[in-house]
Each structure stands twice: as C-alpha cells, then as structure tokens.
Length: 413
Ligand code: ASP
Ligand code: MG
Image: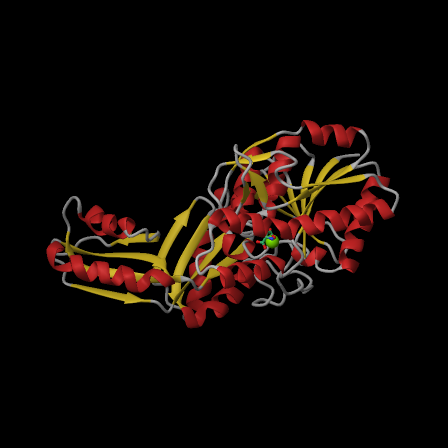
C-alpha cells in the first residue's frame, strides 16, 4: 500500500482506448490498496493544435489568453479519465490546476510553482477517491490561469508528489525507461533499473526526450523517487533516485550521452594577461548566449588560444561578437566550427573508479577519432569530436564500458 502520483503523458491519453487503459491501470493500483493521484497531459497533438489556433488569431498571442487556451487541453483529459474511472465503479474527481490550488508566479507560459495546498486532496484520498489533476497549469495569486512551459505536466506530477510526500512519482510514457544510450544509435542499449538524479541531469541530452529536465531537478531537490515507465507494456521502468549505500558495486559508467547541438569558437593568440577571459565572455553572456565548455591553452610566447562552445543556433552571433572584439583584445584571429558533437560518459561510479577517462580516450583512439576538447566533472567526462564520428564514438564507448544488454529496444518516440 503506497501513495502514488502517476503522471500520464500525451500519447498515453491520446485516444479514448488509451484513456480506458489508463483507467484500468489506476483501478489495478486501487485494488492493491494504493492511494492514487493521477496527473494527465493533454491528448497528444492537442497543445500544438491550440498553439496553432492562437497564432492564427494573433501573430504574437497575448500571454494571459494563451494560458487560458492551452490549459483547456488538460481539462479535457481529466474529465474523460474521471468518467472512465467512474465507469469502473471507482470514486474519482477531476481538478484543474487552479482548483487544486497550485499557486504559481505570474510568468505566463513559464510559471513556477510557489505553493500547493494539499488539504483538499488529502480529504479526497482519505475518502477513497482517485484525485485526477490537470498537468502543466496553476493559477497566480490573483487567480489568473498560468502554464508551466511545454512538457510541464511532469513538473506538476513531481510537485504534487513532493507536496503530498508520496512514496513515488511514476511518469508513464511511451518508452519503458531510461537507456544506457539512445537505442536508435546502439541496438544493444540496455534499460537501466536505477539511475541517480545527478546522472539523469548529466544525461539530459538523452533524458530530455523522456522527461522535462526541470522536473528531474525538482525531484532531486525534494528527494521524490521518480520512476519512468511505459504505459503500453508492463515492467519496472527506471527508478531515478538518490545514491544509496547499496551502490558500492556501481559500474564506473552508467550511460553514454551525446548531442549535436554545439559549436566551438576559438580566439587565437590572445595576450595571456589577467582579465582576458572576462573580456571575452562578458559580451557573450550580455548577448544571452550560454557557454558550455571553456578551454584556455597554456601560453606560449605570452599569448594563448581561448576556446569555448555554445549552442549551434547561437554560433553565428557569437562569431560576430568575437570578430568585433578581436582587434581590441589584440588577438591574432577567430576560428570556429559548427560541425562538432559532444559525447559524454556519465556515472556516479566514476568517483570510486580510477582510469575511466583513459579507457574512454583509448576507445576513441582505437577508432582513430580525434578529440578536440575535453571537460570533466566528478561524474562525467565529455569530449568534443567531429560530428561525423559521433555514432561511431557512442558505439565504441558503449562496448568499451560493457554497457550492452539483451538488445531489447525502447519504443521510438
Ligand atoms: N500538454 C503540454 C505540452 O504538450 C504539457 C505536457 O504535456 O506535459 O507541452
Ligand atoms: Mg511530455
């Protein structure tokens, strides 16, 4: 017997039949004696349809009215699911975000949850009811409807689980868990039974296809055990949790993440004097460009090369900024490359295993893949390589760190 918050995504409630299947699952949990709070997304495609409708009305839709509009998608699913539950003889009640008193700030379209009043939900649960809550929405102090940003139902689920001190927040989606890497790149990628919040955040490039990353941060902060499962198949899914003592035998590497979204820029031959890094990076951050890796060479003849990476979409803008400051800084030149990829090995086990980075570099060397940049954190080693070798690198690392499993593939998104 447990208190569960179960969140079902758009594909899981994409049709009447699928909503019926969700109701069956909730019923099974009720029969086992679990208390269940269900959070649902809008039926798949619905939020996009509403966005398009708004844009046909106003080129830049009014933000307050946009939230009123978008919140209706979830309102449809809570009502339908509650009907399906009632058909099964269960007592259920649907609530919009504002009805269940999810109070947010007033930042329409990207509101942050400030407070959740759990009293009414507790009363329902104590009376044996299933509480069905619309994801992705709340209301500000004045009662204006707000939404939490695309994919925000995950955050609603985690926030409710935190506020109710639920035993688990279960995110039902169309994949059966978090994999060692993207199964579309490596056939033998394996579902992980367990992963830590930190690892999940470092694997954001893989995980963000499954979960809104903000919800993982939230779950980590409030220590809400989070489980990703498929609503179409039975299985344990992947539990995302804190590191436990039983993880002594943790493998060094849990997964291989990658992304093609970065670009690198190098300012060559800048004088090696105090203040140079800030002179280069302040104009970049003033332009709201986020910097990922930063590498400064040792100096030779009083000058050094300064390299950093940015999102590929911001490459041209960053390039223009560097060209504009080049003369003032006395740099020799500016070069850049947008055809790069970042490949990372991630694992909390790295803390207690030596030689992880060298295993990585050896595997890449054996494939003759040149490493352009390296950065490390306590639980991650990332390299920048030529984008054309990305898949080869991921496959060779996946096998070097013996991550392969049974070859069961996750369902495609
Ligand atoms: N329906 C919203 C969206 O499509 C929220 C969610 O599904 O989590 O972004
Ligand atoms: Mg989603």
